[in-house]
Amino acid sequence: MTTESIAATGRGRPSGQHALAVLRQQYDDRIGALRGRTGLVGTVGSTVPVELILAAGKLPVLVAPEPPHPMPHADPWMEPEFAWELRSIVDRALRGDFEPLELLIVTRSYHEVYYYLKEIVRQGQGASVPPLHMYDLMQSQRTAVRPYGLGRTRELLARLERLAGRPISDDNLRAAVALTNRRRRAIRALLERRRQRHLSGTAAIRAIGAAYFMDPAAYVDTLEAFLRALEPTPGLAGRPRLLLVPSEPLYHPTLHETLEAAGALVVAEDDWWGARAAGRDIATDLPPLEAIFEKYFADTPTLAVSPRAPRETWLREQVEQGNLDAVVCYVPPSDHLFGWYYPALEEYLDVQGVPSLLLRQDVQDERGREEISAAVSELVRRLGPASQTAGREAV
Image (cartoon, rainbow, N blue to C red; front, side):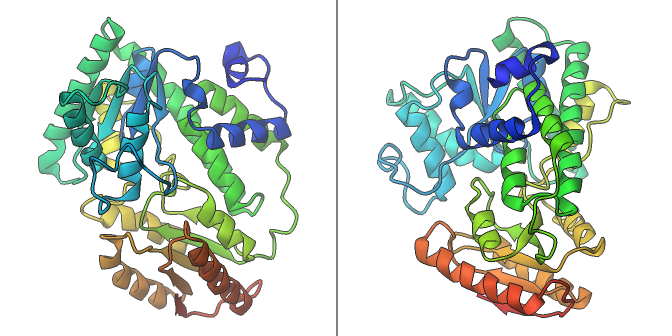
């Protein structure tokens, strides 16, 4: 059963176990949606308003980096000092992975990708690079930048209207909002079941992440089928519950797999690939374009949001609602930002009496995984199934 048949007029809805298999496949095979399909628009980053793409009659597909690997296409253009995820996206674009896309929309957080690809194309070296658009939504949530962001959203709407060859009406936008709000509700239902220890963090991160690569209607049907059939996974009830706070987007399940193989259970993560994926619904009592903009302007989970208060509010809500045994901060050597904020977070957790663990190794490195596993195994041993002991371990 394909995701297309699942989406078709509600027919062919999958069983629970088959639904999980579909979600895993879509998460793992991230260019599967590009094979043999037309009408695809790629997105880079978490703040592209996909509702505009859907309203244009196109399918949004997230363009994600691959874990660190040789990058022969990007190496001649980008210095090794660039973050690996930026270099990976450029490498994939130059080797032709995204050639089927009608448009590639890049967000401000990945501006290096946009400008490097634009220059490569200008030099006549990017024949397989799709047309590019920069959605310059500033990560500052100050009132002064709101008009600029709304203007860039109107600019993106106009670009998509040209791509579609027709105007995009308010009714088109409302229909897209209804669909993505339904997707958000399904993801929040999954997050609730996860918090109750009904499934592992590794399974949850795949089920959530599949949303970025599937037709939204197919995704909701599949996730809802999975949730209807979901029974609590044996062996999770006694595991220490962790909140994971990473300093880079969790494009891969490796960290979850490592933490849970060591005996922990990741019940939430401060990341748009996981517990931050849904957020709030888009308001339906505002003009639709304005409501869509407000969602991405004010309810964004990106690492660089400024001021940090909205991001920290979410994290504190997770801690203060209880049912957590520890917080794990993942800050690998590639980090250039989160380390500045960690001391204040550590102080807050100490005041709350919540144990915390700082991981400084790179989970993509074999030795790093081994050291992370050993540290988490020791944390699990110290916590026990119901420990409330405060403290911190730095790795």
